[in-house]
Length: 59
Image 1 (spheres, rainbow, N blue to C red):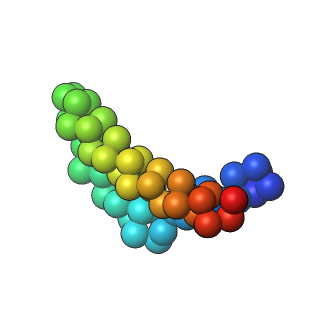
Image 2: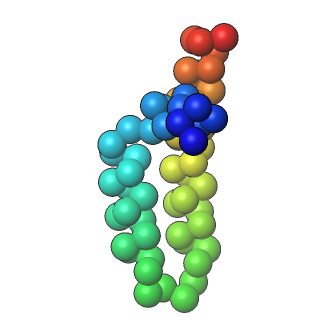
């Protein structure tokens, strides 16, 4: 798995994991999933930017 996704794994910061856990915890009992999905997309966008930046540096 590290061979396939190593760059993405290296681009993910400890804070990203913490934010993901906080996000899941905050909305775990909320029936309205739209807020959860919106904040998850925002986190994904930030992580994706770092992954793309690393690709450019390595490419």
